[in-house]
Length: 448
Image (tube, rainbow, N blue to C red; front, side, top):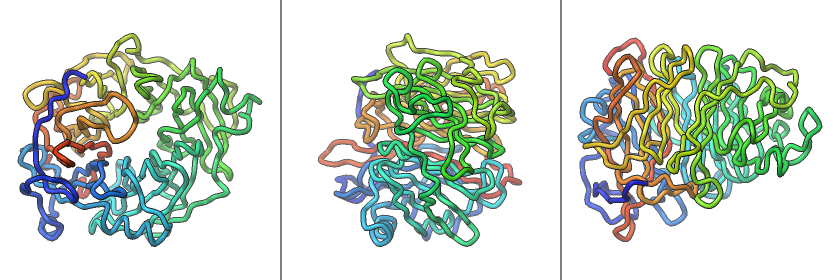
């Protein structure tokens, strides 16, 4: 990365040597919940010796107006959440990495529940989004890297990274019933595909650790990216879940974690892995979701359509993706190059590559992305100088939430400010935000 200058920002966090600044208490924030949306971000650095991590909840419009002055509510996931996981699973959750809300992107129910995936342990934690209180904790295996809900809200798909398995949790948010369906688990490393090929194979798919699952908007299939390259498309409704399409590493490159659907097109990216194994990678592919169902397809069918690639660059690591208003433009972040590439979804052509480096941050390292309900702002999790997960070169010097103003109808944008996070341990900055999601509370209001 360009420089690893530490920019000091001090928030009091458990176990950190820091000076307190304005952070709203839970009680203060509970009395002010009249906004149309919130921005949730998790700093995955430890708040205690055996884990933790801080959840920050921002008033969305306030964050957009004044990024550096926005006062988040802070929840230590090394507190009540850890205690619940210990009591329900016997082990402590480690490294909160991804979050998703129930209800889907078009929900009007206020996204009442949130699921948190812990990437060092295999825990998935369900929380009440209003009270921020933990409800249920499930240990799904070895490394719960990412989760994704089915559109009908009846299932949550879990990528168990180092187990090399795909798990399914049955979910009933109305009754707060969450149960791991062990019979549904799909082993991605052992056995054969519908074509008879080995699921994990040195030439085809050398490392089948699942990175990110993404279910299509109708809930028919789930796209599952793989650490060593290749991809599976899975019918998540079957028991056990079943592979219905298989891709090798020549068709879909390694470490994808950006999956998002615009109309009938599913966009999937690839990204960099470890510094030694795959230090730079950035591709974006497009798939016609109508060509997938419960009937298995031949290998590499339908073909992955390459939208663009930056693989020849020395600094390239695609991760987060987001769609602008009315799905007009696809935004793809690069946490090594500090850029956002915008793609016109009408013709899948790159229209701009905007740099986020500037007055707000000289090295932002944008990771995951999400957008405000009216599409005025894109929020980016900005990585810290000491990445807590991944073993990659996603180093940044301004850990926190970056606020990007959307310009020219979504074609472009600019980083207007950063709400910084800090977790100092022995004088060394450990803060490393990764998870970020917008929680819609009242879609009828327009107070972006």
